Image (cartoon, rainbow, N blue to C red; front, side, top):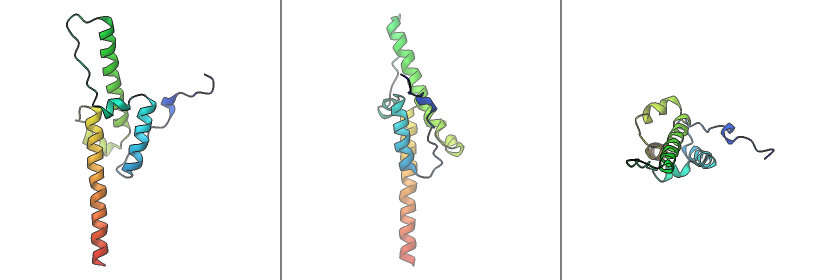
Length: 122
């Protein structure tokens, strides 16, 4: 259709450790637009090919591996170099997503507690 742009030209949201809530929402929308969010959300598992697979099975297997790699690539590219070093050993998009959610939500809670402690001292 005329007027439709290529979605891959939409800027990938970059996470540098600040603003996790906003980045998470933006990244989820980005992955949904690429039809990859279910790969992250459902811990997508690519089934092994059976012996003597049919062409349809080969095609589905390849498509599954590709979708998983694309989702992982988007998450990896969507974070700063400092964060990349912390997630590079994680194997699945779901593991990466959960790590970021837990790690940076915890930081937010810690910062909130530090603020409360400072207020009590004043």
